[in-house]
Image (cartoon, rainbow, N blue to C red):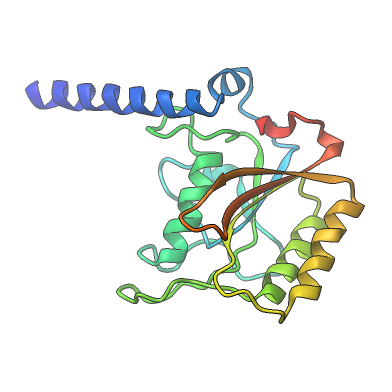
Length: 205
């Protein structure tokens, strides 16, 4: 009984901290209004995701057709952990310890970070060309919102033209973007693009 009580108290404290964080970014009222709509497709360009994670709304997550599965093969890899963490922010079950923003939307995965063997200190990376290709493919697949949590680790002219063209493609489709936060370095940004066709409140973002 004591263990059960301690567990419940721990969950209450955890939920209190989570509520404070959500309120800090003004998400509580929005999340109370909606959990999303399956017709709204959210694209995620990141690492692969542990789709079967018990706290994810996995039934609403799918991979971009024609590419390697977006599901993790090495759950201990940095790429998998990062991709799953970001997916959890968006698609965590509402009754989980970390409720997601829009778990009832459809999440479309387009991983660009390869899974590196556990124990390796190498940080997953992708070239500008690979990112540009991923943007074009996932936008052409019909996503309404595009989330990217990426860092420009080593500025290079290689692939910059292709990446600019991919971003211009978003502009030509009348997409807008929000800078949702900043990472550890000045080149580390979390960007969320969304199509104006779904309005300013598409999928609760």
